[in-house]
Length: 233
Image 1 (tube, rainbow, N blue to C red):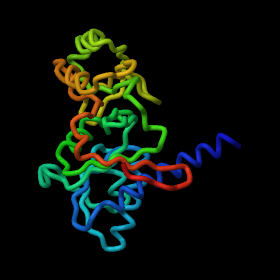
Image 2: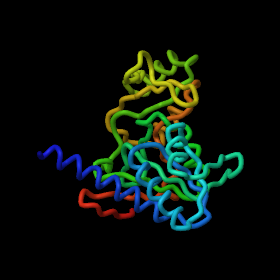
Image 3: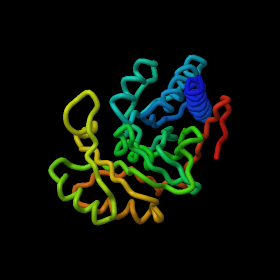
Image 4: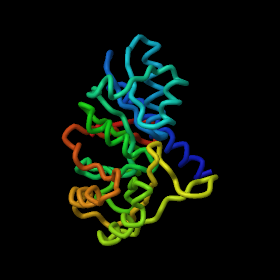
Protein backbone atom coordinates (compact mmCIF):
# COMPACT_ATOMS: atom_id res chain seq x y z
CA UNK A 1 0.00 0.00 0.00
CA UNK A 2 2.82 2.40 0.89
CA UNK A 3 4.60 1.68 -2.41
CA UNK A 4 1.39 2.33 -4.35
CA UNK A 5 0.92 5.67 -2.57
CA UNK A 6 4.55 6.64 -3.26
CA UNK A 7 4.14 5.80 -6.95
CA UNK A 8 0.91 7.80 -7.19
CA UNK A 9 2.62 10.74 -5.47
CA UNK A 10 5.53 10.61 -7.93
CA UNK A 11 3.12 10.61 -10.87
CA UNK A 12 1.23 13.59 -9.43
CA UNK A 13 4.53 15.43 -9.04
CA UNK A 14 5.54 14.77 -12.64
CA UNK A 15 2.15 15.80 -13.95
CA UNK A 16 2.17 19.00 -11.90
CA UNK A 17 5.62 19.97 -13.17
CA UNK A 18 4.81 19.18 -16.78
CA UNK A 19 1.49 21.01 -16.78
CA UNK A 20 2.98 24.06 -15.06
CA UNK A 21 5.71 24.24 -17.70
CA UNK A 22 3.13 24.04 -20.48
CA UNK A 23 1.41 27.11 -19.02
CA UNK A 24 4.64 29.06 -19.57
CA UNK A 25 4.26 28.69 -23.35
CA UNK A 26 2.68 31.66 -25.10
CA UNK A 27 0.61 31.83 -28.26
CA UNK A 28 2.70 31.59 -31.43
CA UNK A 29 5.79 30.09 -29.78
CA UNK A 30 8.11 27.49 -31.24
CA UNK A 31 8.71 24.93 -28.49
CA UNK A 32 11.54 22.45 -28.11
CA UNK A 33 10.02 19.19 -26.89
CA UNK A 34 12.27 17.07 -24.71
CA UNK A 35 12.12 13.34 -24.17
CA UNK A 36 10.79 11.50 -21.13
CA UNK A 37 7.88 10.80 -18.85
CA UNK A 38 7.59 14.27 -17.27
CA UNK A 39 7.72 16.05 -20.63
CA UNK A 40 4.86 13.78 -21.73
CA UNK A 41 2.57 15.58 -19.28
CA UNK A 42 3.71 18.94 -20.62
CA UNK A 43 2.91 17.80 -24.16
CA UNK A 44 -0.55 16.60 -23.13
CA UNK A 45 -1.28 19.99 -21.60
CA UNK A 46 0.10 21.76 -24.69
CA UNK A 47 -2.25 19.71 -26.85
CA UNK A 48 -5.15 20.77 -24.62
CA UNK A 49 -4.10 24.41 -24.87
CA UNK A 50 -4.08 24.08 -28.64
CA UNK A 51 -7.70 23.01 -28.50
CA UNK A 52 -8.30 26.19 -26.46
CA UNK A 53 -6.85 28.27 -29.30
CA UNK A 54 -3.13 28.56 -28.47
CA UNK A 55 -0.95 28.13 -31.56
CA UNK A 56 2.42 26.41 -31.21
CA UNK A 57 4.98 24.52 -33.24
CA UNK A 58 7.11 21.78 -31.68
CA UNK A 59 10.67 20.66 -32.35
CA UNK A 60 11.05 17.07 -31.09
CA UNK A 61 14.32 15.83 -29.60
CA UNK A 62 13.72 12.15 -30.37
CA UNK A 63 11.71 9.83 -32.57
CA UNK A 64 9.66 8.89 -29.50
CA UNK A 65 8.74 12.52 -28.90
CA UNK A 66 7.92 13.07 -32.57
CA UNK A 67 5.54 10.10 -32.56
CA UNK A 68 3.91 11.29 -29.32
CA UNK A 69 3.51 14.82 -30.69
CA UNK A 70 1.81 13.55 -33.85
CA UNK A 71 -0.53 11.39 -31.78
CA UNK A 72 -1.45 14.45 -29.70
CA UNK A 73 -1.93 16.65 -32.75
CA UNK A 74 0.99 18.98 -32.01
CA UNK A 75 2.33 20.33 -35.33
CA UNK A 76 6.06 19.86 -35.77
CA UNK A 77 8.84 21.86 -37.34
CA UNK A 78 12.65 21.64 -37.49
CA UNK A 79 15.69 23.67 -36.52
CA UNK A 80 16.33 24.20 -40.23
CA UNK A 81 13.12 26.22 -40.43
CA UNK A 82 13.16 27.65 -36.90
CA UNK A 83 16.80 27.71 -35.71
CA UNK A 84 15.97 29.74 -32.59
CA UNK A 85 13.00 28.20 -30.77
CA UNK A 86 11.41 30.45 -28.16
CA UNK A 87 11.47 27.90 -25.36
CA UNK A 88 12.45 24.30 -24.71
CA UNK A 89 10.79 22.04 -22.15
CA UNK A 90 12.78 19.05 -20.97
CA UNK A 91 13.43 16.78 -18.01
CA UNK A 92 16.63 15.98 -16.12
CA UNK A 93 18.14 13.15 -14.10
CA UNK A 94 19.71 15.57 -11.62
CA UNK A 95 19.54 19.32 -11.00
CA UNK A 96 21.89 21.04 -8.56
CA UNK A 97 21.49 24.37 -6.75
CA UNK A 98 23.19 26.21 -9.62
CA UNK A 99 20.73 24.73 -12.17
CA UNK A 100 23.44 22.56 -13.67
CA UNK A 101 22.08 19.29 -15.00
CA UNK A 102 22.78 15.65 -15.71
CA UNK A 103 20.64 14.35 -18.56
CA UNK A 104 20.58 11.36 -20.86
CA UNK A 105 18.74 8.51 -19.18
CA UNK A 106 16.48 8.39 -22.25
CA UNK A 107 19.48 8.40 -24.64
CA UNK A 108 18.34 11.63 -26.35
CA UNK A 109 21.01 13.87 -24.80
CA UNK A 110 22.62 15.09 -28.02
CA UNK A 111 19.46 16.41 -29.64
CA UNK A 112 18.28 17.71 -26.27
CA UNK A 113 21.51 19.69 -25.87
CA UNK A 114 21.29 21.08 -29.40
CA UNK A 115 17.74 22.29 -28.79
CA UNK A 116 18.61 23.61 -25.33
CA UNK A 117 21.48 25.64 -26.78
CA UNK A 118 19.31 27.06 -29.57
CA UNK A 119 16.28 27.96 -27.43
CA UNK A 120 15.79 31.38 -25.91
CA UNK A 121 14.64 29.82 -22.65
CA UNK A 122 15.07 26.36 -21.12
CA UNK A 123 12.44 25.00 -18.74
CA UNK A 124 13.39 21.85 -16.84
CA UNK A 125 10.58 19.77 -15.34
CA UNK A 126 11.35 17.43 -12.43
CA UNK A 127 10.01 16.01 -9.22
CA UNK A 128 11.78 16.70 -5.94
CA UNK A 129 13.81 13.48 -6.09
CA UNK A 130 15.85 14.96 -8.97
CA UNK A 131 17.03 17.97 -6.94
CA UNK A 132 20.51 17.42 -5.47
CA UNK A 133 23.11 19.39 -3.53
CA UNK A 134 25.82 18.41 -6.00
CA UNK A 135 25.88 16.45 -9.24
CA UNK A 136 27.16 12.91 -8.85
CA UNK A 137 27.00 9.39 -10.23
CA UNK A 138 26.38 8.33 -13.82
CA UNK A 139 26.93 10.78 -16.67
CA UNK A 140 25.44 9.44 -19.92
CA UNK A 141 27.72 10.04 -22.90
CA UNK A 142 27.04 9.44 -26.59
CA UNK A 143 29.97 8.00 -28.53
CA UNK A 144 30.76 7.23 -32.16
CA UNK A 145 30.89 3.42 -32.51
CA UNK A 146 34.26 3.66 -34.33
CA UNK A 147 35.81 5.40 -31.30
CA UNK A 148 34.25 3.34 -28.50
CA UNK A 149 37.41 1.64 -27.18
CA UNK A 150 39.63 4.75 -26.98
CA UNK A 151 36.78 6.81 -25.52
CA UNK A 152 36.28 4.24 -22.76
CA UNK A 153 40.00 4.39 -22.01
CA UNK A 154 39.99 8.20 -21.94
CA UNK A 155 36.98 8.31 -19.61
CA UNK A 156 38.88 6.07 -17.19
CA UNK A 157 41.76 8.57 -17.13
CA UNK A 158 39.23 11.20 -16.01
CA UNK A 159 38.33 9.03 -13.04
CA UNK A 160 35.13 7.55 -14.44
CA UNK A 161 33.99 3.95 -14.45
CA UNK A 162 32.45 3.77 -17.95
CA UNK A 163 29.97 1.06 -18.93
CA UNK A 164 28.35 0.56 -22.32
CA UNK A 165 24.61 0.75 -21.72
CA UNK A 166 22.86 -2.49 -22.68
CA UNK A 167 19.46 -2.52 -24.31
CA UNK A 168 16.31 -3.88 -22.69
CA UNK A 169 14.47 -6.59 -24.64
CA UNK A 170 17.31 -6.57 -27.19
CA UNK A 171 20.84 -7.87 -27.37
CA UNK A 172 23.69 -5.40 -27.52
CA UNK A 173 24.20 -1.74 -26.66
CA UNK A 174 21.71 1.10 -26.63
CA UNK A 175 22.00 3.04 -29.91
CA UNK A 176 20.69 6.61 -30.09
CA UNK A 177 18.54 8.13 -32.82
CA UNK A 178 21.84 9.46 -34.22
CA UNK A 179 23.48 6.03 -34.40
CA UNK A 180 25.74 6.72 -31.41
CA UNK A 181 26.43 4.27 -28.58
CA UNK A 182 25.43 5.34 -25.07
CA UNK A 183 28.11 4.97 -22.41
CA UNK A 184 27.23 5.50 -18.76
CA UNK A 185 30.30 7.09 -17.17
CA UNK A 186 30.12 6.56 -13.43
CA UNK A 187 31.67 9.30 -11.30
CA UNK A 188 31.54 10.00 -7.61
CA UNK A 189 30.81 13.56 -6.55
CA UNK A 190 31.45 15.88 -9.49
CA UNK A 191 33.07 18.87 -7.83
CA UNK A 192 33.66 20.93 -10.98
CA UNK A 193 30.92 19.99 -13.48
CA UNK A 194 32.00 22.62 -16.02
CA UNK A 195 35.55 21.23 -16.11
CA UNK A 196 34.33 17.64 -16.36
CA UNK A 197 31.91 18.52 -19.17
CA UNK A 198 34.70 20.25 -21.07
CA UNK A 199 37.11 17.35 -20.58
CA UNK A 200 34.61 14.74 -21.77
CA UNK A 201 33.59 16.84 -24.77
CA UNK A 202 37.24 17.17 -25.85
CA UNK A 203 37.72 13.39 -26.12
CA UNK A 204 37.84 12.52 -29.85
CA UNK A 205 34.85 10.35 -30.68
CA UNK A 206 32.55 11.76 -28.02
CA UNK A 207 29.40 13.14 -29.64
CA UNK A 208 27.89 14.64 -26.52
CA UNK A 209 27.94 14.39 -22.73
CA UNK A 210 24.93 14.49 -20.45
CA UNK A 211 26.43 17.25 -18.31
CA UNK A 212 24.59 20.51 -19.07
CA UNK A 213 26.39 23.42 -17.42
CA UNK A 214 26.31 26.19 -20.05
CA UNK A 215 22.63 27.16 -19.92
CA UNK A 216 22.07 28.10 -16.28
CA UNK A 217 21.41 31.76 -17.11
CA UNK A 218 18.33 30.93 -19.20
CA UNK A 219 17.11 27.93 -17.21
CA UNK A 220 13.98 27.77 -15.06
CA UNK A 221 13.33 24.62 -13.04
CA UNK A 222 9.75 23.55 -12.36
CA UNK A 223 9.62 21.20 -9.38
CA UNK A 224 6.47 19.14 -8.91
CA UNK A 225 5.27 18.01 -5.51
CA UNK A 226 3.48 14.83 -4.47
CA UNK A 227 0.29 16.73 -3.63
CA UNK A 228 0.07 18.09 -7.16
CA UNK A 229 1.67 21.47 -6.52
CA UNK A 230 4.52 22.95 -8.57
CA UNK A 231 7.02 25.74 -7.91
CA UNK A 232 9.32 27.52 -10.33
CA UNK A 233 12.98 28.10 -9.42
